[in-house]
Image (cartoon, rainbow, N blue to C red; front, side, top):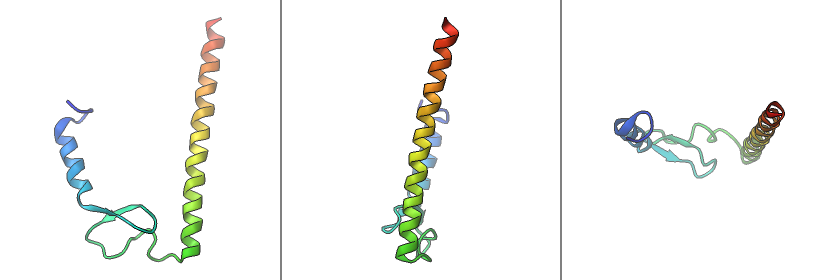
Length: 82
């Protein structure tokens, strides 16, 4: 059995994924039935660059937060052991 949902859940995810396509400008997924990407079609190149930078910064800050959180948990576990 795969994951919590099993094979049926996996099949549903694959079927849903097949209804999406990846935008060549912003690399986000959107429905194949749409003509243009709803994420970036209304943005100029400058606005798109700012959005992509913001997304990358958010990913980096999440990674740092997770790293610091793990370090704090390890420190607490170490202190409680002694």
